[in-house]
Amino acid sequence: MAIDVQRQTGSLRGARLRISAAFWRRPWLKLLALIVPPVAAFVIVYAASLATMLASSFWSTDAFTAEIVHTWSLDQFRTIFNRDNAYLGIALRTVWMASAVTVTDAILAFPLAYFMARLAGPRLRSLLFVLILLPLWSSYLVRIYSWTTILSKTGPLNWVLNGLGLPDTHLAYTDWAMWIVFSYVWLPFMILPIYTAVERVPTSYLEASADLGARGARTFRSVVLPLVFPGIVAGSIFTFSLTLGDYITPLLVGGPGSILIGNVVFENSASNLAFAAAFAMVPVGVMAVYLTIARRLGAFEAL
Image 1 (cartoon, rainbow, N blue to C red):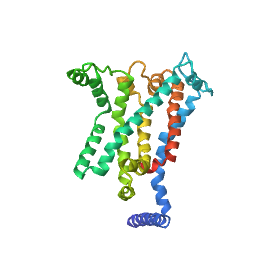
Image 2 (tube, rainbow, N blue to C red; image 1 turned 90 degrees about the vertical axis):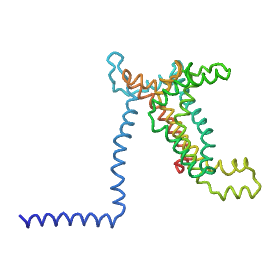
Image 3 (cartoon, rainbow, N blue to C red; image 1 turned 180 degrees about the vertical axis):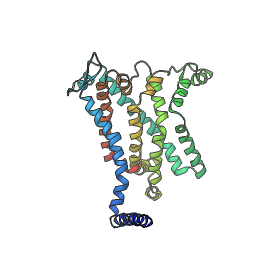
Image 4 (cartoon, one colour; image 1 turned 120 degrees about the vertical axis):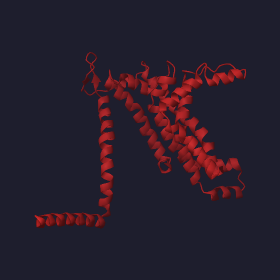
């Protein structure tokens, strides 16, 4: 028995040594062993589900039983892009809202990111980082409900305006409220990539621009903005895509006409799954085009 145990132990050690030697002689095997599990999980969980949704978008739903009919057709997409229906308008409104939020966040984030990267001291920079990231530690619903209170008729905003002798804003449950809440919620996702891009700008470039006689506006336009623009595009990937697929904010702070793609997908996910899958492919297609453009603009290098 003791001899058999020793033989088994020796064989296990030999196998481990052979495997270790194989990894040492072929470094690509080690890299492959590290990459295969996460890639396989990505393919199974994400790519397979996306492919299933794409396939479902070409099917149809029985009107009486609400069951999926596995007959391939483009009926769902014809319904979406039919001008007589409201779905095309909802898709365009969603893209418009995502674009407006992205532009707003870029305008708000750039001055703060530049101040943090170039002007703020270490302590102030750390404090600003905490203030920017602190809302992300709280619940998404809590932040939205807080804005419903702020924008309500008897909320703090109208209370301050009335104290100044100004009329009420009437922003609650409107597209304006949705735009404000989206811009606030996704702002940190724009600040951080821009901060990283500004921090990478060599100080020598700014000094050279000043030595050549360029003023602040010209330096910003000709030196800073071209170098930071990939970071802006990188941040816009987050703000644009997150707005494009959100359905909770329109549901809680939007008005009766503030329906976006996510709301339609959510409402039809139980009764008309094929149509919901087809409509969900619209933002996927929009983001595919957006990511292609962002890649050409160098956004992925700024992430």
